[in-house]
Length: 126
Image (cartoon, rainbow, N blue to C red; front, side):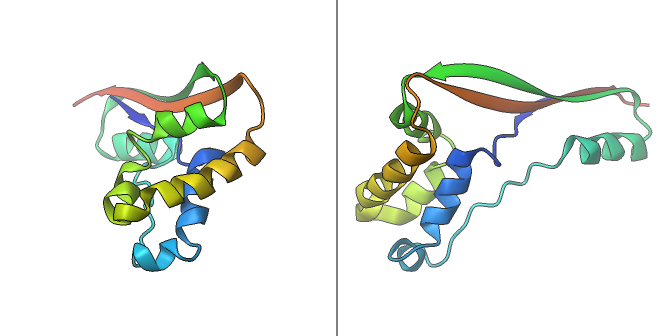
């Protein structure tokens, strides 16, 4: 099994930061997407407690080379930003404009490395 684990990347942190600022916090009624993804230690413990055998749990980074911070926003527009877009309505472009400025400051490189993290694990059911 594998699951995304990029919730601590600067792009995701900036999404949450921007959502907490006016006017977006009011528009989205204080919404903040908190990732339900656990740590690799927690997944290992869960599998152990279920008496699983041959437990393997690790985090892997898939390095993506993107043109710039705008490309990062495009990348996360189909994932991390979706629940925000659903709540922003006509304010989506304004949110993206603010987020874009923050991203350019945080990720000024071109091209830039986007380290896409995933947790992978397997085990045998007893």
